[in-house]
Length: 294
Ligand code: R5P
Image 1 (cartoon, rainbow, N blue to C red):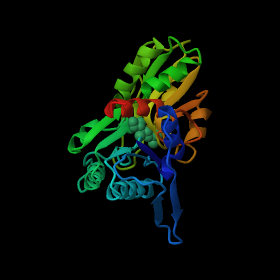
Image 2: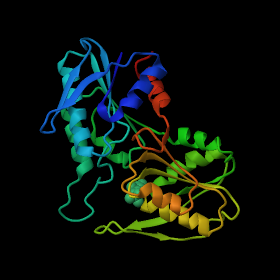
Image 3: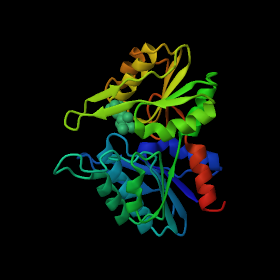
């Protein structure tokens, strides 16, 4: 097996190779003066199981095109199989037409991925898993939530309350609360389809004097997480932490969340960021070993 870390997931690629005791094969990569990407594989891929690791967080369009270029080239260079490890798949939230005339972008993303012929596709906590059914190849939608919750346990958070900032994250907090051995709950969030502004209906969460962790799949502008932290603090929660799988952290998202009273933001390397302290490499390594019977 050959693990190839793409430019958007260099560290994760090397960590996966390390977890598996395999050497990662670096790419020769440069940008042409006009911005186009140049790639050269530095090892012969013929008859090899090739694993490309490339996330598609910001800049999404560049990272996604690079992913397609890498997969297509790996196939073209005679590999036996091509696996794509794409921990964060861009456009996952635009999975239906919320307003007339909108593009269903996440479906298009998977249509494009189909064209480059992938044998095995690994992602994490995909926002709208139903859309994965359109994808004909072998897809594995893994979860990083147990890794996040185990990490949080290191902060003596046993018995902490796990909060989902909206109903989309309920399944995540069910998993997390099992590990933290505390209660869980969720907020009722609605988002304005035009402005993107969110409104949260506040119920009593029964968190007075308790530690709490908010778990979400994505932190983008931080508005959702900020509101959830604010609600927990206003209801008397003691220590509050923010945890997410995909820390996109656009603009001042991190500062906004911390300003509201979160002690720390903990994310994974599904998207590299200053808060990506939890690695999904062992989970990917285990999936690869299982799939390839290693
Ligand atoms: C949406 O349903 C997602 O699960 C996240 O809650 C959302 O993407 C976070 O976005 P933002 O950080 O901009 O509020």
